[in-house]
Length: 323
Figure 1 (cartoon, one colour):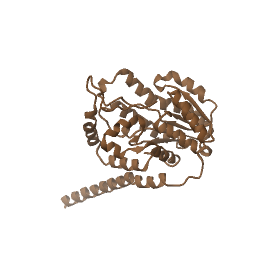
Figure 2 (tube, helix red, strand yellow):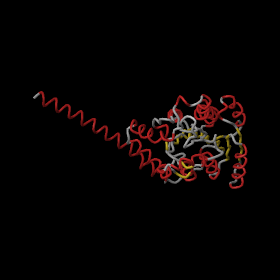
Figure 3 (spheres, helix red, strand yellow):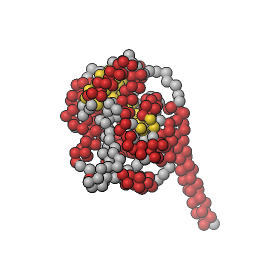
Figure 4 (cartoon, helix red, strand yellow):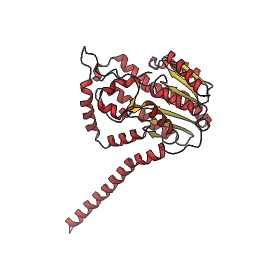
């Protein structure tokens, strides 16, 4: 009799755990198809300028995703402030946007690897602008896959300054005015690299994990205000600075064109607090989440190791980010 009661209790506990695990799986993974339908195919009724404010500030806007954010936001009627390190590119992009769209364009050339000293200059440059959207896009990575202890100290410092400090400080500059006006949006462009542990790209992945955590926390902190934070977690995006990765056949197959990705990512603004930016990336991330983290890390180890630079060798693959 006692054995039967114990067995029934164990079965009941296992049943409850099974129901919980099933519901948790359905809720977590069910967000993907629901998100694809709601975030990527719904119509929009209110303009960005009306909802958030007339100016958009985009860091890392001289190339790739940042440049495309500038064009897409200008196409939606927002004035844009371009911030990046290459002045000649900024002048060219500003001229192109001004010719194509009836908006105001400003630009400022700064090197985010210079550290905290540049933010006084940035704060002065941004003063007086009614900033509705801040896009923290600037970023950099290791030149090539490499063991952590072989990364030079200067490169470590630059990765921290560009990938982490820039987002913290730019957000700190614009957030008080956004909260005072009771409207605004901070968009933090991170990477799917921050979702898992990536051997030979350990520092880069760690900075993106920081962005993911910081953005999610800030999003909740702003919950009861009309200021919002959106976290964008792209998978692979084809840009001129990642062209060398195209020699890896599987990467070229699943990577997304930068124009297509950014147009889609801008379309998720106001619809999703956390997004992959593109419907195919949502599906890819959902599939990755089905894999245990330790398995993914082992698989990535096998993928990255052949491209790791050996002493006195040129890297087989370089990973550069314009900032």
